[in-house]
Length: 189
Image (cartoon, rainbow, N blue to C red):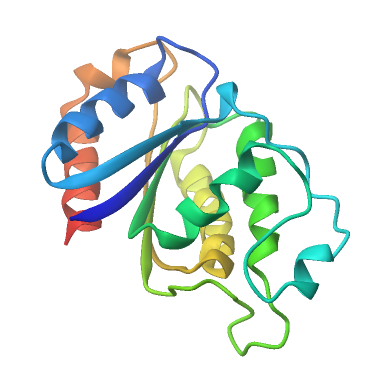
């Protein structure tokens, strides 16, 4: 059974990311082992750029926070789904810290710059934007998702739902729910 990590980067408990988290967990139930990380409930410090992780030859970090404890989960999962709002045309701060900490997987001596145990993992991003240009947000998400390749996520897919500011409104958007279904099916394939 595949291991899927769902990373929810929203602070809005009754918001669209949480509605999608519940939706996807039901969709994946019985088909995958699912672990959820809600960044609002985790302590994920900013990367110190100290390079201590570069001396260890396995993905690791000297900081003692919740991200460091997740490194083995990130390294061993088959796929990861990120659920998040768009904040000020960018990733929310908690998700940016999470992304920056994947620096602990970087190995400059490798051709692909990665010391991840597996380099065939899938990454999906589903982002909810209240207002603004969905095409611009989609490019931003794609650019940032590519950075997760260092942690072994070499195949990615994303969807940005526009006009999704009202908490829970995503559940009334059939096209966006279809995109969530497609992401779940893709990550399981």
